[in-house]
Amino acid sequence: MSQDPHTHDHDHSHAHSHLGDMDIRVRALQSLLVEKGYLDPAALDVIIETYEHQVGPHNGARVVARAWSEPDFFDWLLRDATAAIASMGYTGRQGEHMVAVANTPQTHHMVVCTLCSCYPWPVLGLPPVWYKSAPYRSKAVMDPRGVLADFGVRLAEEVGFRVWDSTAEVRYLVIPMRPSGTEGWTQEQLATLVTRDSMIGTGLALSPTAPVGAPA
Amino acid sequence: MNGVHDMGGMQGFGPVRPEVDEPLFHAAWERKALAITVAMGACGQWNIDLSRSARESLPPAQYLGSSYYAIWLAGLEQLMLSRGMVGAAELQTGCSETAPCTGVRRLDGAQTAAALARGTASSRDAPGPARFAVGQRVRARQIHPTGHTRLPRYVRGHTGTIERIHGAHVFPDTRVSRPLPPFVDDAHWLYTVVFNGQDLWGSAASNGLQVSVDAWEPYLEASS
Image (cartoon, rainbow over all chains, first blue to last red):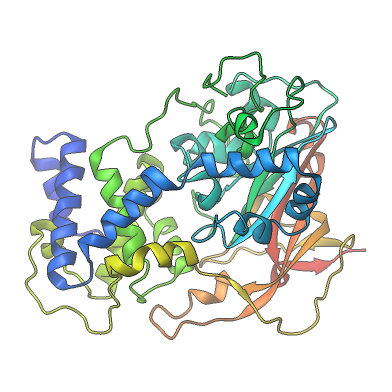
């Protein structure tokens, strides 16, 4: 497991910025792996296209909006989230085994991975930096109320917290509470209120009076 | 391993800092690092537990001082170096100086979308009946393995309640015991075990806190 001394020298003997060094390092890695025949550059294009443009929290928002609108789907989601979510076409890497948990007036759910960065990719896309950061990973399991405060969110003192540490290959999706004042809204309209953070548990669904696109 | 990656309940890192309008990637190299790591994850020379083990075995100061994509990159380089798939000088120059290893599977562009949509299930046939039932009280064992484990330190020795049973899944602790294929593929029952926040943290816990981990059966023992 020893570090290569040349890498070490390189990092400190050149005047590149750190970002410049990382850029050079990743370019070198890619050319090497392609030349060795380990890597197809076309695979990289597909992976980037998938997670930059196709898979993201808009998928999860559609799942939540449907659950808010269709009681049978809500039940299915709580009973077998993997199947219910797959029925909408959202499957695959880092979402092979899904569980959905629903917020109530009594209980607020929050999802974390204290050991690394486990996150439900098919419904939420790639995790944000803060989700993978030491402050969140350390604090969420002890002081989720404090975490919410870091996000500018305050819940009544009597609301309990249920934190899910994703230590295995099960991935969790929080179903936030449906905001009042949305009676008669279409699923498409409802989905605009479902933020990424509300599906991790570090935020709430937007209120219909708040401007759409406001931070969670 | 009781490493710095096992962060639950550590203090001193400061507040969580969400970014407004956070970009998906903060530098061009992060986009490439993600894609290369995911693509090489299909090469068949390691599994997800071996790659997690490589990341958490980085020197502690390096782990804490690196962004997550930098951790991924360092872990990937380590996996390939230790298998002789690449050499240190080759990583420097980006030019191949030795013949490639045989048996390395290349994920082709044409198969990639399907591979991502399929994923890799960790569920397996059950090795026998589940030892614990929903509602049963169990204690997380007081273990400190020097290798890879997914039982966080903060629950060890504490008693909780079985809340869900997820079937049998591949057990990470033994899956890392053979670095090359064929990998060890022991399966054990996997449970969601919920703990009272006060039991874990005393008065430092948020009011009304319950915390769960997903724990394989060998992590648990019956508690009266």
